[in-house]
Image (cartoon, rainbow, N blue to C red):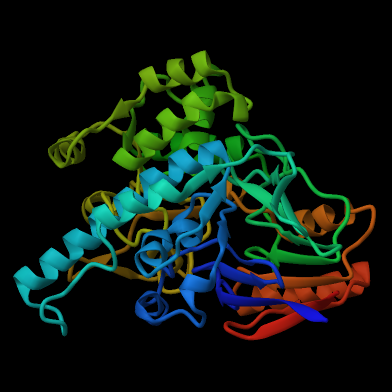
Length: 459
């Protein structure tokens, strides 16, 4: 008798760094391979050795392309992983884009640290380089959704789209007669551009995200909320700043804004600026894979022709200098960096302006500080007083809320024998644990980092 075990190397008791290691008698599989983001003690974990021998991992399965799920791939390949990395077609294109950007930022940060001597390491080195990222691409292997793929004699896997972003999937691993489902990040039931999350109908074990396990998104129409804040800000002769995730949220917001203009609910003349090279590139990928969305290719092209897409940093300064009201969509989504900082340095101190928060904000980020009504933000070594309106629109979140997560589990014809919760802060994990156990009568375990759990015995 040999065992099937599960150990989270990241994404346990936190919303970042997702890496879940499934050990079986035939294969060792890593589900997701993400970077830790957010507060410093989390980011420092990216530099620590994984609690496993990388060379013993046979395959990686990627649920989607966000950095907290794919960003560690270049490093794990650099450290000796030689197997295939399985993912959907859109995920492959988006992951290449995101990893190249991440590597470029790593190199730039190391160069700045060395030039300005603010490093304990001499010299400071990037976590990985552009060359490291490019080398990992050779191991990418695309599999189609809803198609069973045999990984070994007794192990197979299948992807099902789960909303969240284009190409995002839940994955079912059938292993020695046991069914283990990894939810990935589950999207909303009502997205403007993506179909509702699909689902499997049976599982022995369900490893499930819990990002919003302790809250419900507002039932207010998100278009109405956008309409209200845009029109109020324009009336005040201010600017609307939307810190935005480049993959997923940016494209949905662009689509909704154009729909509001088409219905004359916001001024048709107000400029919409997409100041994020990565978001622009991600939108091009979305257009190429328009069959994965609810919006046709021609409609996407028409929308993109009507917005202003910046090409370099000098245009950012020109846009800031423009006096007329505008809507600016810029990264990063949690205000941890990117061009949005330049806009906020100029606009956050003016009561006429509005900052719209449209996605999850992790602990320790500037976005969370704004939601917590911080009176100031520190950007590039200087403090800026917060006077602008700060509004949160939860309906634009890419993550299912507590009710939607419970609904997703209820769709299983044969309920899981156990749910194992990951990808959530402690309050969300605990709230969802209680809800699942109380309402669905399914045992729940909250996974802890580097703690191995025995799932089954394989004969």
